[in-house]
Length: 223
Image (cartoon, rainbow, N blue to C red; front, side, top):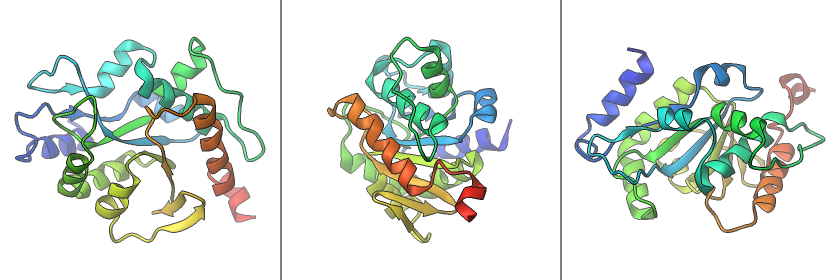
């Protein structure tokens, strides 16, 4: 068993998760992650499954099994990951349509970490999300360190993350709603299931990534 899976087991064994439909999360597809242009992690509130199995489920395995993004949240993540992977300091690629294979590949090449890792619901109770983040912030930070992304997109989770995941870390402003934390770019962005038009979401995120320097190469940042 990998060190990462052992960490998930440690989290799952905490009292507030036992018997509460724990969700295993992280890198969706290891091979695609390894070859992705920019390692991009989405920090989300919680994962929900209609079956509500007492033992929970593996979100990574479930999404891989689909082979393509399903539902509003994952379709948005696919678009946003495509912008993060393919964007440059001078250009954001045109938003992809639902049936493009490149869009599915972008989704599968990213990582998803949930703040609330058990008892997921279709509509988030923000007090519960904050409570779970407070209880698990230390382990979520360990998760992120093991995954080692270059870009972290907080989907409606920045308030909890800055308070409980990185409470003592320096947060340097990179651009509006973007920060440098532990050498990574962190974006305070909307939840993927928000009601704004998907084109607005896509290009707004692209603008933040461009202007923060997240889409520059290391050599460009040093210049």
